[in-house]
Image 1 (cartoon, rainbow, N blue to C red):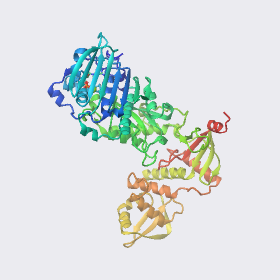
Image 2: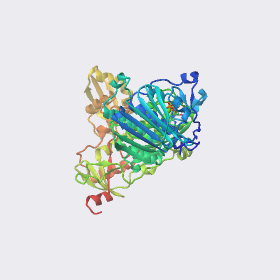
Image 3: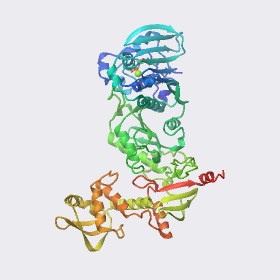
Image 4: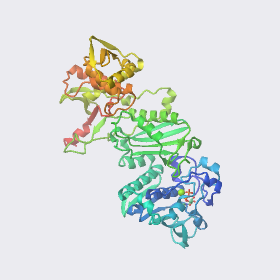
Amino acid sequence: MGGGPGANPARRDGCSEPYPAVSRIRVLERSVAERIAAGEVVERPASVVKELIENSLDAGTTSVTVEVEGAGLHLIRVLDDGEGIAAGDVPLALQRFATSKISHIEDLDGVRSYGFRGEALASIAAVARVTMVTRTADAGRATRAVVTGGEPERVEAHGAPQGTMLEVRTLFYNTPARLKFLKSPAREQALIADVVQRAAMAAPKVAVRLVFDGREAIRWPPAEPGQRVADVLSGGKPDGLVSVTARVPAGTIRGWLVRPEGSRPTRAGQYLFVNGRPIQSAMLRRAVEQGYAQLIPVGRFPVFAVFLDVEPGQVDVNVHPRKAEVRFSDESRLFGAVARAVREALLASPLVRQVAPTDMAAPFAGVSAPPAAGAVSLVLEAREAAGTYAVGSATRLPALRPIGQLLRTYILAEGPDGLYLVDQHAAHERVLYERLLAARHRGDVTSQGLAIPAAVDLTPAQMTLLVGHNDQLRLLGFDVEPFGAHTALVRALPTLIPNGAPAALLLLALAALNGEEEGAGGDPLERLTIATACHTAIRAGDPLRPAEIDALLADLAATEDPYTCFHGRPTVIAVSGATLERWFLRS
Ligand code: ADP
Ligand code: MG
C-alpha cells in the first residue's frame, strides 16, 4: 500500500530515489509559486485524466482505474488505493498552489514526484463539478467533498476504503469557449487512452484499468517494464521488441524498440520518458529516429518507448506548464549517444523479416516481426570499455545455399532455418551503396575514363548545379566539365558503374543533387551516392547466372546492414521451416 518511503511503486521504476512520505499539504509561498511555470493545466479531458492519474501515482497507489463517459465531458472518475488525504487537508488540496510535494524553491531541482505546483485540483474544480472521496490508512472514516465552480459545497464523513476517488462531471460546463476547441469525441477519447498508456509505461508496477462508457478498453496487471511496453506497443508480445540499454552522458537509457517493419505513417507510437516522467522532446525523438535511419521507408516513423534517466541537475522539467517538455544541459552529446545506442541495438538484433503464418489463404501477404527470435539486449558499457563499436555477428547474414532465381527478381536460397528470399535489386543496391560509401570515406573512389568524352546538353538550372557541385561529383568518381554555356563533357565515370550511359547517369546525378529523388533526405553527396547505387544496381527482370547469384549473396553477407536497402525496403525475407510445416498442415 502507499505511504512510507520506498513503498511507492510508481517511483520504483523510473528512478531509484525513495519518494518522501510527506503528506501534509501546504499553500506554497507566493515567491515559490510564481517561479513555477504557470499556465493552463486543463486544456481538454485528457489533461484532467493525466493530472488525476499522476496524483494517484504520486500517492503510491498499486492500482488505478479510470472510467470515462461521453469522451470525458460527462464523467471522468479516477480511483486509487494510495495514501489518501487527511480529513483536515481536504479543503486545502482543492486550493490553488496547495501541495504536499515541495515547499522551497530548492526542492524543485530534485523533484521526483509528478506534481509539485499544487495547481491541478484547483484548476479542474474551477471548470467542473468535482467530488472527492479520500481516506488515509490511519483514518477511521473517509472524507467526501463536493466542489462546484471552485467553491466547496460540502465536506462530510463517508464510508470508503483507503485511497482516493476523484470524480469530475460536466467538464467545461462554465467555459463554453473551451468546448469549441475540442476535437471529435473519438479523437478526445484516443487522447485519453494515450495519456493512460503513457502513465502505464511510466509506472509498470501499477495495475491499470481504463473503461470507456462501461466498456473495458485496458486491463493490465502489474508487470515488468518491458512487458508493460509490449502491452502498449506490440499487443502484449515482448518478442516483437528490441531492447536497448546504454550509458549516456550523465545517465542511462533503457528502451524497447519496435522492429523497423512495425513503422507507422505517423509519430503516434513514439513514447519518451525522462526520470520516469512522460515527456515530449524533439531532440530525443530525432535521436532515436536517427538510430533507425535507412531501416524504414521515407515517410514512415519508428515506434518505440525510450526511458532516459539522468541526474536531476541535467534536466529542467519546469519549462512547460503541463511539465510535458524538458530541456537538457548537454544536448548534442546526448543526441549522439542515444542515436548510436539505438542503432547498435537494432543492427545487433536479427532483422530478417519473417513471413507470418497467420494468413493461410495468402501466405505471402502478411509480413511481421520474427515470432521467436527474442528481444536482443545490448549493454553498451562493455563495448565502450573495449573501445569498439563493431557490430556483433548477429547482424550477419547466415550462410546461404543458393537454389536459383524466381521471376527474374528474387534469389531463392536455403538458410539454417528455412527458405530465404532475396530481392536482387534491393540487395545489390545495399552492396553498391556500402562500397561507394566506404570508398568515399577512404577518399579512393576510382573512375574510368571514357574513350570518347560524351557531350550532354544541360538546361541553365542543370548547368548551375553542375558548377556548384562539381567537387561532390568528383568525390564519387565523375569527371565532368562545362563545355560552352549549354553543354557538359563527361570524361570519366565511377569504375563501379560498368557501362553506364554517361548522359543518363549525369542527368540522374544532377537530379539527385537537386533533391528531386524520391525521399530526398541527407546531404547532396549522400543523395548522389544513393542515386548512383540505385542506378547501377542489378534490376528486377535481369536474368542472373549461378556465379552472379553466388557473388551477390557473398557481397550482401559482407555488408554492414544486409537486411534493408537504403530506401528502407527489406532485402531479405525468411520463411522458417516451422512456418512451412504449418502452411502444409504438417504440424
Ligand atoms: P500537486 O500534485 O502539484 O501537488 P494537485 O492540485 O494535483 O497538486 O494536488 C494537491 C494535493 O492534493 C497534492 O499535493 C496531494 O497532497 C493531494 N492529492 C491530490 N490527489 C491525491 C490522491 N489521489 N491521493 C493522495 N493525495 C492527493
Ligand atoms: Mg497533481
